[in-house]
Amino acid sequence: MGGSLSTEQVEGLRKRLSGAVVAPGDAGYDDVRQIHNGMIDKRPALIARCQTAADIADAIKFARDAGLEISVRGGGHNVAGRAVTEGGVMIDLQTMKGIEVDPKAATVRAQPGLTWGEYNDATFAHGLATTGGVVSTTGIAGLTLGGGVGWLMPKYGIAIDNVRAIEVVTADGQIRTVSDDADPDLFWAMRGGGGNFGVASSFEYAAHPVSTVFSGLIAFDLPDAPKVLDFFRDFTPTNPDELLTNCGLVHAPDGSGHKIVAMPLCHCGDLADGEKAADQVRTAATPLVDLLGPMPYPVVNTLLDAGFPKGARNYWKSAFFKDLSDETLGIMVERFEKAPSIMSGLIIEHFHGQVTRIPATATAYPFREPGYNLVLIAEWLDPAEDAANIAWARATFADLSPHMADAVYVNYLGDDERDRVRAAYGPNWERLVGLKKKYDPDNVFHLNQNINPAG
Image (cartoon, rainbow, N blue to C red; front, side, top):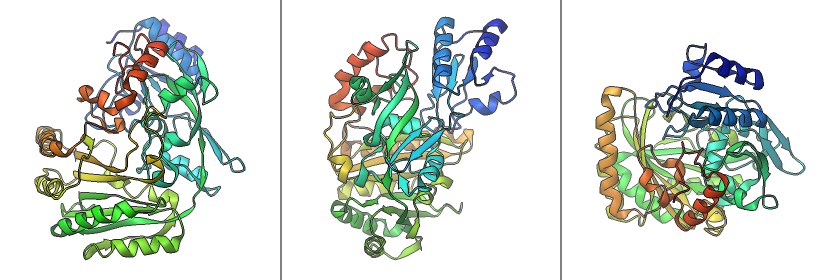
């Protein structure tokens, strides 16, 4: 869907919005339309850089009146690239960065243009934190609306488990504040339903006493992968709530292409207990690098930033594991050795603790069983290498498919996986379709992992 706009239409929106309106040819247009994944290259007819919920409502009405597709950009980090429309109106929230921390109530009001790095810095000043992304440049809005996996989830649940209220502009242009007490059905749907139900203009989160944590990365040589993966599989089921440990087959960050197996961890409890856990991890094999130690919590969310530079080309596959058998782990190592890019890797995320104690139907995000999730990341820089890297990711996922469940975290779905959206919602699918019919019957918000009101 696309269209042309008259000068009068554009000027009319400029007069109404408190934020800027950016059209093709304007200064900054190309910068604003670019998102994190360098494979996405779309040109909106107009970009509405909103400052307030009223701006968002005006932008929605403008786009609908003009018959133009709407996309919504928060941090622009999501791999599928749905934050940008070709020929439509991009509602850009990047400049909405207000944040207010109430240390006495341990709550945070935050606008959707914030990154997790900015959010963490603000809450850390008060000795508080909320479960957020593991890469600091990720936006709070998109990550939260899809669920919000992060370092603190065994202790405090995922991001949506900490959301107390959301201000949202729905497809009819209404500004609503939803919570357990106000419009609870919409509040339920937005906690995991992605951008399907409206544009979030602010969030209220619970925050927790987290300041200095025991965290960091430890890495081993790839020939030690069988021992390290076996250790990881045996070690993680007994992890306390305070400890999250993941494991990845990745390349050394020095650009050498050296293949390693890395275990990032975060212990948000007593530092002495964190040290004890680290000492156990150190016995997995002989470390190549040991960067484990006490650090401020905001630093933890920057440890992986260098592996996800803006503009790199990304193609991901993901699913929850059915099993973490010797065969499964062997396939991962074998396929990783064939990765065509020194930026690619396979990550295993461990789910346990508080995130798994909440009923599957309590929020739209449904995956609450203890277990493991695969994030298969193909990442490279040269467009000429697109075919080779995408083929590697698809073949690797196909080889692992017998060991994967029909369950996927919606935030990891790629642009070519529309047929897997239902698998992201499991037992919650039918209720979500019903609520989509109620709140967005025309599917105005369809540039997302879409819940079609037609089912």
